[in-house]
Amino acid sequence: MNPSSDLVNKLWRLCSILRKDGVTYFQYVTELTYLLFLKMGDERGTDQIKVPEGHRWPDLMKAEGAGKLKLYRETLLALGDPQKTSDRLVQAIFVNASTVIREPTNLATLVAAIDELEWFSDARDSFGDLYEGLLQKNAEETKRGAGQYFTPRVLIDVLARLMQPKAGEVIQDPASGTGGFLIAADKLIRAETDDHTALSEKEQAFQIHGAYRGMENVADTYRLLLMNLQLHGVESDHIKLGDTLSPAGGAQEFKGADLILTNPPFGPAGGRPSREDFTVTAAVASYQLPFVEHCVRALKPGGRAAVVVPDNVLFEDGRGRELRRMMMETCDLHTILRLPTGIFYAQGVKTNVLFFQKTHVSSGSTDAVWIYDMRTAMPAFGKTAPLRADHFDAFVGSYGEDPNGGAKRVDEGETGRFRKFTREEIAARGDNLDITWLREETDAEDALRDPADIAAAILGHLKAAMAEIEALSQELEENEADVVAEAAE
Picture (cartoon, rainbow, N blue to C red):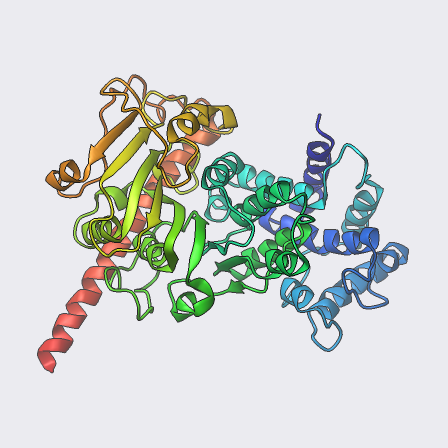
C-alpha cells in the first residue's frame, strides 16, 4: 500500500471515535485541519508557521485530561485572533474556529494518533498529499453533499495536463472548492521549472503569491481551501472568500486570466447575479450559466479555459442559447468532452467539459466544435468502479498536444467517439450543442452495482430536478416583478 494512502486510512478510521458524538465527516475533516496545522508547524518549525507560544503542538501534547481540551479551545481562538496572530493566512484559516469535540479522551486519542504517525518517511510525499487524500476520502464517503466542493482528482489532473499551465501565467478558478485545480496547475509548473529554481527571484515570488486567483463562497470550504494551498506551497494573495457572481467576482484581479480551470456549482443560486458587467445571464437565477459568462469575460484575449458544466448548458433555450452564441462568437469553442455518468453523482447530473480560447475578435470565433463522447457505452463508474486516468487515454490522444485544440484531428465518423461539427451545422440545430450519435449499448446508470451508488444517483437526480424547477420558478417570478415595475413607471 502507498504509505500516504495508509496514513489517510489510519486517520480516517479515527473518525469512528467522533461519530459516536454526532460529528459529521465534514466536521471531522475540519477538526483534522486544525490539528494537522499544529502538527505541521511543529514538524517544519514554528518560524515558518506563526503559532503563538503556549499554543503549539508540544504544549497540546503535554496537557492532560480536561486541560488538554481547554487548551485546544483556547488555541483555536488565539490563532484566529489578529491581536495574537500576525499571519493573515493563519487568521483566515482559524477565523471563527471552534471544536466539535466534547470528550477530552477523544481529543487525546486524536492527538496521540497524529503524533505517532511517521510524517516524513522517504516513501511519503508530503503533508499536502495526505490532506488531499483526506478530502477525497470525505468526498467518497459523503456522496450526498461532498460533490459540491470536490472534483475527482483524475479529472482535475487530465484537464490540467491538457491545458498546459506555464510559469508567469495568471491562472484562475472562480469556484475554487478545496483548490484541486490550482494545486494541479502548480504541480505541473513546479515540474517544468525544477520546483521554481529555474525561475528568477521575481518570477518565483509571482508564482507563489500572484499567479493563482480563486474565489470560494462557502466559509468552511474556504478554510479547507487555504489549508490545502498552504500545504502545497501556494500562498497566493488572490484567494478570496466571496461570491464570484457578485461585484467581487468582477474585480480587476479576476480579469485578464491566461487560464481558467473550474468546476462551478450547479443548481439554483438563490437569486440573480449582482454583477453589472453581465449581460446575457444577468437575470438567470442558477449557477451554471452565469459562471460560464464569468469565464468568458474573465479570460484575456488568447486565454484558454476548461470548464465543467451540466448538460443543460448545452441545450437550454432562452438565455442558454444566447450564452452559447455569445461564447462561440467571442471564443473558439473548439472541444466538448461528454463525461461519463457516475463521477458527479452527488449532483446527480450529467456533465461535460467545455474547452475554449478567447479570441481577439467579437464575432465568428468558432469555426467548428469537436465533440468527444466518453459517456455512451462506457462502464458504470462509482465507488465500486472508480474512474481511472487510463479511461481518458483515448480522449487525450484525440485531443492532441495543442491546448487550444489546434493539433491535427481525425473525425471518427458515426461509429467513433470523436466527431467534428461545423458552425453552420450547429446553427442549423438552433445552436444546440447536446449532440449524440453513438448507440447506447448499456445504460450506465442502470448498471450501477453498489446499493449506495444507486441510492446516491437516484437522490441526486431528484435534487437536480427540484433545483432546476426552483431556479425556473424564481426566474419567472423575478421577470414578472420586473414587468409589473416597468408598467408602474
